[in-house]
Image (tube, rainbow over all chains, first blue to last red; front, top):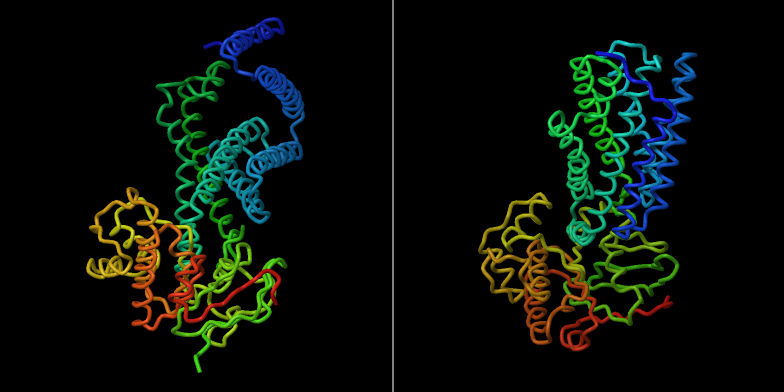
Length: 257
Length: 210
């Protein structure tokens, strides 16, 4: 095994040529998203360059405060993005989602870094990248779970009203929607696990192998992170929906619009 | 004198609907009429406490419904809403699912058939509800709700999907059944012929009335 080939700026610049292929296909297929592709590519570049610079600084000057600030920023951004994609939920539901995302993410991250890897939670080399993977996937999961929950509640309005009129408790009416949405949110992660190693070599493992890590070590990390991701998605969606759905009705068993 | 089972005092909803004080007579067929937008359906939802009034009070057997457990209230004061909901399954399965949600055992097939018969439905119990017409679905829905035998049955436009002949027969059967069981009936309907024929008390509500 050898260490990773360091890319110089010219080599790195060549990858942007691939975007021309996408632009040509878009033009031919009359997909009017060229502006979006350019903005997305530019934003990704700027964001990652900034992240790279910040991470380099933190790795060279490790301090718990930097790690804490970085994690807080990650949590804040993941909450903001999740809530932006689910604007229709009420204030208390948003609080439930925010706390669930933050606490579930922190719990799984702490367990992974401190118990499995056996490193300090303030070690930026482990905590920051793992937090990104765990929180990023939890965010995607909870966004999907909330979307499915809201859509099902919306289309099930007649059913909900009929059962309320019959004297069924809102808890009994809404719980099946919660369980159903949890399942929907978990499926992509589990499908990902099913195909792993056969259909694709996952990103984290690829990165480790490229940088010279033994494939056996990379595999162990990959398995561990996949289980951690699945747990954090499950825990975040479960807590968000279980604490959240209770905000949809009051003590008089009235469903609030 | 007839017993008053439900009555309202200075009831209003969202500052846009102000109801005159209303009295519902026990064991009678009470029709609620009025032009669109006067809050007839809202009134029924206020009666079963699925909506919260913004002012005034509702009394059920002289007790303020704000002090009554809403789940118990809805089991006694049951609303059959205008928008029909049936599970995508057979009639029998629909009975089973609604009873399961209420935490009750599924009634016998004979009981199911009796209630379907009241609503002029003659299908076999394994008939799939997804293949029925709007009017048939409405009648199956009413039959299921009726089978829970509440003390007050509120019907919101129960014949909206039925033709005149069916409307007449279904309402006649339902009212006969309710009389036998001592169930008070409140019906919101736009059909003036039904109101004239079956109404024992007709309450007209209008926007801004107080």
